[in-house]
Length: 420
Length: 132
Image (cartoon, rainbow over all chains, first blue to last red):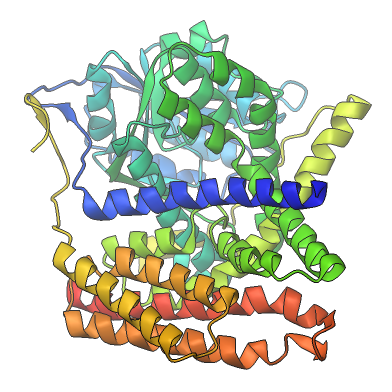
């Protein structure tokens, strides 16, 4: 009886996520909801761009060249590259750009002080920032030329604490992994983030290709170096302070996706651990927050705990099979059909297959749909990633060990797509 | 469009609600036909077909495209699902009705979802050509 109840509870949680994603997909399909921004206002404040980079010689030049091509007035721009104890030519390449362009500055961190992760690099950069609006780009990103004016527009609204643009995969044709990551990104941004924005729920600041107010981060005491998902951490701190985050779908920034399963594992495991850390930290503050409405609280809790979903699916699957075998009852098999469906519903960025499909359709894609059935692969992989992440996190909590930041390696093969 | 004093940046594309209604009715009709003709509809099959129809009718029928194409895809999906479930239910028990087949319990739900996702993806890829 206890096991049966537990099984039903697990199914209920999985169903809640499924319904959530179904609502998101329906919202994006059926409504023409839009990003509201002040009309006829030319808001062009001074902006600082932070680029944390550690051993990014293959991609940093591409981004800095792009920065010099941005259409935003250069006299209103300040670009700070944080060479975070790189052992390659990242610092030299950044210096070359700095010599040619006054608005680009480089901060070099020694191996003693730097190289400990993005949050620490950003905290260091904050000491040098002069402007009130800060945008952040990872070194492997490649923004649209007019990205800054499109993003900072939204800061004209004093309630907006951060903005996030859409992330698209640059090296999508490279191999199966990059193609599947591209699918995840389509579902995660084109549908999931957009619906959350349109429904006034909790769109997330993604840590890159977005921006925030300097005063906000200062008031929050900067980034927490102990957190592995500094973006999710900042997202919830912003909401708890009563500000909102805008996701802007028609502002795009390209990223170089991981190209093999090993790199995928390392990157996603950091995301999973970071997200779980945030879940432990913010669940109660969200529940008791007076600044968040009921639907924001519900969505906030679902977002926070999403990396536990593959673990719950795994448990439900095992439990369902056990109940069926031990009791020879047919009813768990009905729900067993539902579990793999949620497997497809919890892929990568946890956008379900139908969300991914509808996102690709809205993007005008035609051939990518054939890959949708293969999304099961990434989910099964994510199941292992999340279980390991959860176990590691619990173990390090018990042993009092601090988590180390795992850097994602970029080989710069995405550069080829600009030369074609 | 949008609040006064604000501008929006995305054009609306009207969902074809009439197609959704017709699709929903056809899905219910198919369900009734399967049931009345005593085709191997047990709880599992019913649940699978219900999920497929739910995803197909509400997410694909509002999209641009010919109604008869969508209906053909819906009917084809239901037939594939029914055939799959009928064939697979033969493996349900290994020795009569007593002991459950482990392979069935573990593999059935996974494979059951794969036909669903494949049919849904085929439908979407066909409808996407209309958008072009």
